Amino acid sequence: MADSPAVQAPLDPKEEPILTRLLQLRDELSLLKQDKSTYVKSQDVIHIYDHIIEQVHLLNTLRNEHGKPLESNRVDRVLGDCFQLISLFFLTIGRNNEAPAVYSMASTVRRLLDHLKEAAFFTAKDLESIGQSLDKMYDNLKRGKDTCSPHLLTLLESRMDVCRNLLAELRTSLSSLSPALNPVHERLVSILRSISAANTRSKFPSAEVEGFRSQLKEIKATMVDGKFLAEDSTAPAGQDIVIGLLDRCFLWSDIVLTRQGKIDERFKTIYDKLSDIRNHLERLTLTQAWSLRETDLYNYQRQLDQVDESRINGNFEDPSGYKADLHAQRVSRSDFLTWRLLLSQSQTLLYLLRRSYAYIYSLIIASEPVSEALLPIFNQLQTLRRCLIEVKRSGGVSSPRELYPYSMKLSSIDNMRVDGKFMVGADVPEGQGSVSTLLAECFDLQYELKVEAEEHETDDS
Image 1 (cartoon, rainbow, N blue to C red):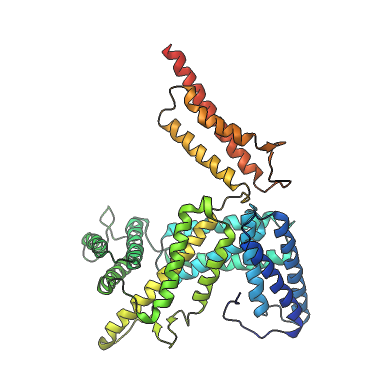
Image 2 (cartoon, one colour):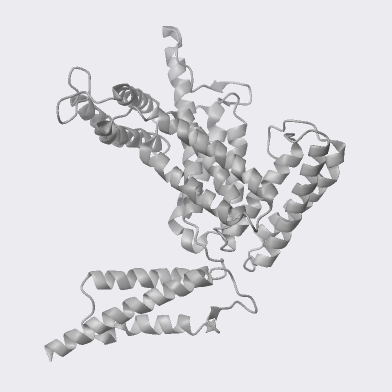
């Protein structure tokens, strides 16, 4: 397994034993991740986690003694890999609300915020979702203050503080946008993203992009004297934000229609890699409940991190150093076509990179606090619950007999419990409360439907 790029400092010889041990622990985690023959047991993860924390303590002690508390070298890179894996393992075993599980989400949120800042277009709803995730992560840290390693808590708090500062900066950039312009702004962001998505299709949808361009013309036609007006005919604050975004949408749609989804051969390799990752993650979002082991996200995160960190000053470069420069602003007329080409490559690659991180973010958020050992039962109960809710919404059943299939399935699941717990061999997997609560809710829904059906039968008779 290769280390991440951009190592910042040479390794202190005294840190060599720590690096060696961390490499061993990372290998243990990798082997545990690859073993799909059985579910991941909590004790295996906690055992390795405790050893990693021991190495963190040794590393901090050594660096404080030598006056290098902020040192960053290969040890830190490998340690980051270990924490990333441990974090995903905590999600896999259903301990989502504990501090170690926060690391992976914090890393993903940091990438998302960096990319939102770089792309310079986003909505208040985007920031609201991320803000809620950060609040939940802080709550998890508070709960872990008495049980979790202070070394890990300090690391996580510093990472989340960076995220919170970035979030505040992005919120400030939208603070001058009047609520009256929010609908137009959100629609433009949606159109810009949709055009970018269309630009990465295997077969370029010209008619679809033309449709987005028509929507842009409709939006522009609502302007009066070059401004967007509110219902009271006043010009709300934030015109520069919305008008600038509208111009950007027109420029991007024009470039996309000209290029027809074609990527420069010099960036084809990285484009194909990012496109494959995006497509795999998109499929996972559709089948997550039945097919995802959260540790599977590690390989995608690592590949994306390597691509992101390989950029030079934010630019993608081919092997010869040719740049796909997103930030070119002032160019001569003779260079304009070249600039449009560069903009096309960079926007396309950045879209795929951002979209992939967004999928990882949504997959982590959707992770249930249930061990993968209990997920089959949990997923069955979720399906039953949805079916029972739909039956109730559509008017219930005409006879209690129609509920027999649901009753039999719920009883069979209930009979799996031993002393009130769902056992796997001699183990009691995490997530007992979530599964039991869902089972009770299904029984309640079934009972309500049965009572309603019996009342109807009585009334009819």
